[in-house]
Image 1 (cartoon, rainbow over the protein chains, first blue to last red):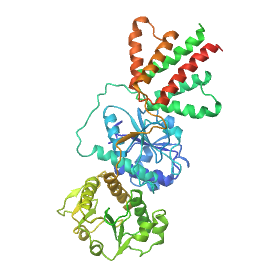
Image 2: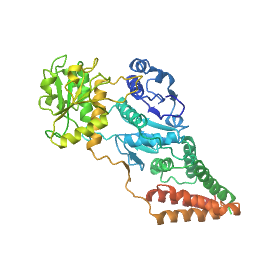
Image 3: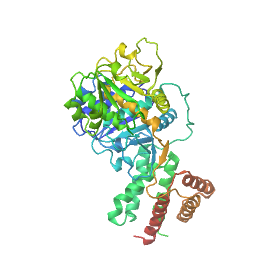
Length: 248
Length: 248
């Protein structure tokens, strides 16, 4: 069950209450998931309240990866889902938990590394985090009353994972022919473009710069890019710089 | 949403902690269910702790039916599910939450009254209660760790109800005010890049140029680009050219 990439990693972004981290661990393990990553927990780490709450699923906390920021937590991932209650005006596929875990199963079977992001209790994920995701998971809650807490959101997603993997469904294995770029490779591509375009004066006027940067970053993460796509896109930019420097 | 028999009643049998009753109410209302029945709550009724926990879903508690025993609570029901973690050696159909809510939808559409029983926190339903049910709902938990609490069990069942009844678009992409670029727009983008990169000396050596052009063109056409993405990508290139021409 804990073989390297046989399941998605669940990544808690800046979780606040230790109890909720413990509750998320229990929710995961209820459905056989045990790969947790934690980004910048508010109250430090390890957290005794998390351990107390996790009883029976404490191993997940012991083995959880701890990261300073979202970027670091996703370094090795090739496909990332963000869970969010609200639409954020970012152009991304929005899928149900069921469809998301179906996609996750297919991608993992094809050798990809999949992660699911869960935001902090009060505010949810920030746009910066969501911009790193390939798709958004939207739980079909009652629009009059959407009050899922962190552990409940984890529970429903983990449940859908188990529904995909236990039971029936003959394994559909995608052709692993494509060598998808990892999250860190996409990040570096985004960084490269942002840096060069900054120098070139693209992000203008200044007041619009953060929004433009977010949109551009979102564009890269939303694209199904292979490693060679990424290399080509780096090459495009490098060549434009060379051309400028040649000054002919 | 609260029409008489448009949804199943969720029946809490001898619930113990008020907090769990409130949590169950929230879980139900998250997925649009509001018909709760309560049988012999340990700490009496009404329960202030239930009310405090239910915040936002308090109406369900106000309107909940209170019953002395399971028999009385099910008097008007024509089809009853019992949720249980363990098999009890009773000969009954055992179904997943998904299948159960599918059956519930069909029966309710045919005018039946459906109920789902949830047992007390520690012990779960007694055999006497289960014997009253037509079928058993079994949540496919990890056999090594089955620790769903009452509100979580309610949550998963309510979620499956909503999945059965709400039109959940399988996959949609938010359009953030723009829509997908047309084929001709993608072509023009590809032309723009090809032309500028040609000038910049990107397609080198010459023998590789046709293959490189094809790959780049293929990249653009393979991407799910919106009109504003296309404009941004044109802008990126134009800015690089301006930067070069400024020669600073």
